[in-house]
Image: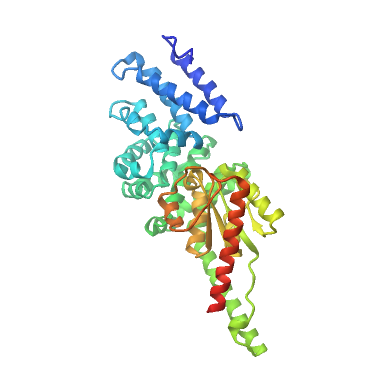
Length: 430
């Protein structure tokens, strides 16, 4: 703070100060994290407020400050603080045409911090800004500035309005061309991973986009090649993105057909067995599920998710499926099998959960399969909206963000037992 109050300050010195601030906030389990984050945000706002948009000498300082804001906005806890400050109008003044890099940074920040309502009110213009930036995508020439463009777009794909606008404005075609024509330069791996995640997100609840990708054999051959390449290079991020798109486009429908065939086979076997025993088919004991629960969670919530898993299994005796190695572990098909084999799906809701294509894939698969979902709120004050709010519906959630762990886990146990009893009573009544 002392350094910021000692003008004049150079852009390099300012950059150094903000880097130290970010290092401070990255300390694991930092005491008074919210307090430190609030102070840094307040100082940034005050600093930017003292700079003039009409003074060319201030441009470099404005850009450094906006870059600092963008880097801070990538942290989910800091995003929450920034949203509470209602900073959308503050950054909107940097979005006028002709502001060059300042405009790009402002939209990158807004993509991270705007809520669902703010996005829906301006979805067409926001999308067009990013579509224009995608024109710079060149599979033969790496452009590092597009890293943030694709990352911000990926964040925006959690919003249905943006997704629909992106498809309507030709965004799919731009990304498809980029992926199909990319060479083997590893510099592009992060951009390719983000591009694949965006395409993957576009397939959710959008049969038209899904069919378009299914019909593009050149694209899917390329994506399968990227999957093999990522496995060889141990690039987990690219591997998961490619695997997710391949699952949705090429494998999910076949998997569901196999599940239906297996269920029909079991039904016929049950009928045959009942006839042999001379009893009514409904009297035959149902096959029990392999798992009581399957935990669907975001890697950012891993610590709490694993703590819930450990308590359910070790203290309460539940049979629970959880991907123990979220970044390196189970395939999407293993996830689908786990959903099929579990009586309840524990959906660990948070902002990072909603932003994740992988988590949306799990949640929507469970929802479409009519599995019994038990929502868990992982962070205090988080309000699910968009696709996650739709799946939540009127379901009661267990609030681990507000209650202490022991009380929340007891509420979760009570809810599972209550739902088990309701299902049993309904079956007996039928």
